[in-house]
Amino acid sequence: MIITLFAFTPAGKELRERLSKLLKEKGHQILPEEAGELPLAERTARAFLRGNALVFIGAAGIAVRAVGPLLRSKAEDPAVVVIDEKGTWTIALLSGHLGGANALTMEIAESLGSRPVITTATDINGVFAVDLWAGANGLVIGSMKKAREISMRLLRGEEITLESEYPIAGTVPRGLRVVDSTTETAGPEIRVSVYRGREADDSLHLIPRCVYLGIGCRKGAALEAIENTVRQALDQHGIDIRSVKAAGTIHIKKNEPALIRFCEQQQWPLSFFTAEELQAAGKGFTASAFVYSKAGVDNVCERAAYLASQCGKILFPKFCGAGVTTSAAAAEVSLSFAK
Image (cartoon, rainbow, N blue to C red; front, side, top):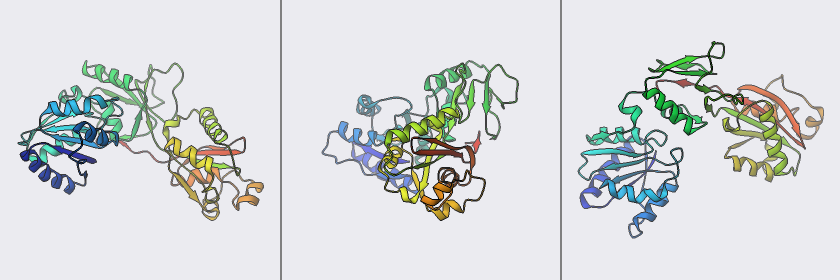
């Protein structure tokens, strides 16, 4: 984690130095506190909006007042932890699951020999926390409202059905019944898949970010054409756009402004492959003599998706629209209840 440490008294600053060394030894990146002459609210805002974990060494009230105006949502807020200046208590104050405050609290408590304070209901009752599990496995939570409903039902002792497109290693937690798509069920309460549910499907969708797009386009293609083609292809094949992790294309498109801009907007890393690399990907792709004459490879989008996904499974072949082609491949997904 990237962590900013705040301290306000001589004793607190001494503890900050000791904790900084301990956390660095565990592989965390510790950023220096913003310039002390700036107001605490401004220093806090800079660290908070960068998404850093914040650790306050001092009174909990100071931390509450500092981060209060910055709060956005459970899905966005970073971890906030408070430690008293003697290092007796370490408290997970904000974003215990998705932000990682609970895990950081336990790690700090172990390092300092302090007592951890965790208040999230699923943790103190030993109940499966769907948001924590999703975060540990790199799954996008389709609806935080439904995730909260699932947690409340588990806390009431109800059984929840989880259907996964992928195998899940480890012991199934108490309160869960894991099924696959062949199991007769009234409908799973949790569904792990890259595919969107049916319109009437009221499941909580957990979406692995394992889909890689290959994108080809004519020179000077419009941003709108690229976006429309990609969205139409995903919609036609029922693939949730939130499952896309990155994209790939041929190296001659490395200066194609609309393609680069589109991937930046979606926050997708864009890989560039040479024609030789694409052609060496093997056989079985949709070949085009015209594309070969222009690019030196018989197919760009399918081969780029395949290589970007590290030789994953092609989810759909070349999809064409307005001078743009796209294809998608899925990388292997590893899920575990042990995470």
